[in-house]
Amino acid sequence: MKNNTFKTTIIAAILGIVLAVSSGFAISSLRANAATTNKPVSTGFSEKTTHLNVFSNAYYFKALGKCSKGYDWSFKADNKNIKVKCAYDFKSHKYTFKFKGVSYGLTKLTLKYKVSDTKTAKVHMTLFVDPQNYIMRTA
Image 1 (cartoon, rainbow, N blue to C red):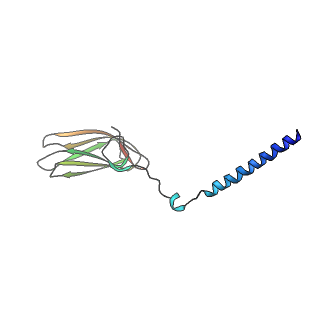
Image 2: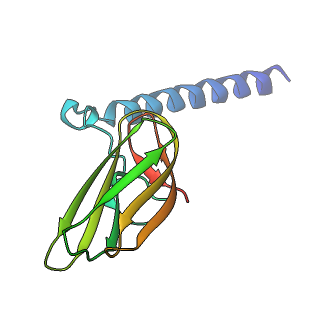
């Protein structure tokens, strides 16, 4: 009986040593490269989008409107965490609105723009800005 206990102890010790040595080799074979470990993490967000429920650096809304004296637009928002810019192409009579987040929060916004000299279009939007100022239109 003593002989079997002694053999079991020896085998357990040898297996323990083999496991420790192989773990040491496995850990030492891992390399840490400062050039790759300090890279900025990609967010996977695009620079711009026109889609709902997609985060990006900027949300774009495009619309048509032909007025005899150029173009006209305005917006009203319940929060001041978004900047809005508009570019108008006089040849194609297209509005391109750019929304950028400047601080965290949810904004309900009404965008108004002239479709013709006598008609104004209204678009209701809900925009969300995350803590890194990425923006998403949810409705």
